[in-house]
Image 1 (cartoon, rainbow, N blue to C red):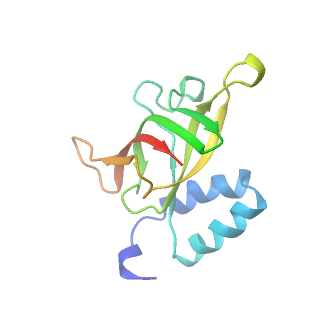
Image 2 (cartoon, rainbow, N blue to C red):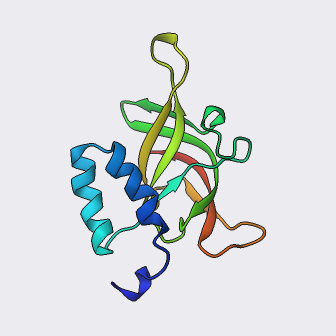
Length: 136
């Protein structure tokens, strides 16, 4: 494993586990071998300022269109976000046919324009917050 990849195994148990459980065959084939070999890191962006771990209160929104998704909101305490290559982000999507908006799991490249990592006021090793205003 290259020296710059040394660190927490948290991304293996968060982002990788979500892809393993819910990803498409293409996503699993593309992401998981690279995670297993140490070439890539994934993480999970779940916690929000107002909702904590409560999925029913997720406020980060995602709106899909012809040009991809527009995602807006803030996530807190994203494990190893500063070294992750991608993340699984839990968002609230539009409700279909006027229904209630449901939760969506989106895989996002952490280097995408509009993704900002913010250091917490009381730093913890490997923990970052995420602010997103991203279209991709």
